[in-house]
Image (cartoon, rainbow, N blue to C red):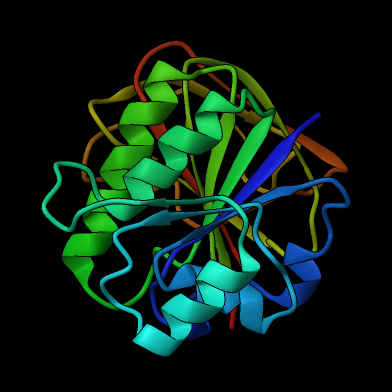
Length: 218
């Protein structure tokens, strides 16, 4: 089981805690642009740094160059964002799961770009779990089928949203508000703030793409 953790250069207060970052004993870390400095400042030397590095100082670039052995630097004029390049690199390693932090908060256009990038790449790699995480939230796209979620005190609440079109035959078990063969329509908020009531919850649906957000109050 291989885990890749990507740290991008969004607002630093959005980065997950050190406890989370260090909870993976064998994780591969990828720093993206200024996110590389976030990792170095937390005592984590990333296995790789990716991006155009246009948001760092000369002193920071010097430190990255000296401490990170594998750097892929791109010209600022490119079709992909730095985060997209990092995710593509992570997926090429064929991991079991990819966690992405440092992509929430700040500019909303960046957030939307990252969300849609994850959506597209999750469809292309259904066997790999790709998750966006910050201090209080975990976002993940679910594809049709059955999924299990373990109760986690760090993420008390779980909400479900239709992303591309209606989610059909949504059945939830092991949660506070169970459902059977319901439809999640685009634009509805009816499936917000559920809670896992058993040790393990099951989520199943037959069509559509579901955006699941697990959260805790800050």
